[in-house]
Length: 203
Image 1 (tube, rainbow, N blue to C red):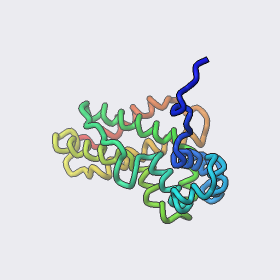
Image 2 (image 1 turned 60 degrees about the vertical axis):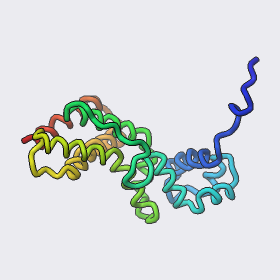
Image 3 (image 1 turned 30 degrees about the vertical axis):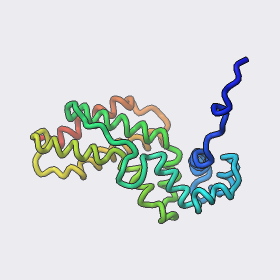
Image 4 (image 1 turned 30 degrees about the horizontal axis):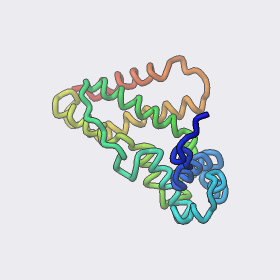
């Protein structure tokens, strides 16, 4: 029987355990219902360790949102790759990535939307984390399309980016809430969204 090296059997760092546990507890119990004691118990560490790393539950929530949705407000943890395809293909790629991000964090998103008004300290980060991942790259891509003549002059690229991201966001929430067949697949919806959006901003 092969014995794993001691390093391979080590537990993840306490901070990582707490972030993962907090995401589960916030999603399960809600922002208000989640307690630092429950989060510590879920992580398998003592409550003192939680306060040493994060100070307060609000700061822990900020860190959870940052980890789930891509770093601090207005900045992604990874630099977006520069799109090289057509506008349609780049929008389809964005929609697929954004949908995956939302689906991976759906329960946490629901908790955030329902109770974020009670947590002003992390409100900006949470809302930006949910609604604006990849936004900078998308806005830049639409801006280039305007300059190249693919998109109608005078279009505000930031507004266009938010409109398109909002379309994907709304579809994810609708599917998760209705929990029944829509008569079309996610891929078909994304393709149709791109078609309608591109026609709407075409010269």
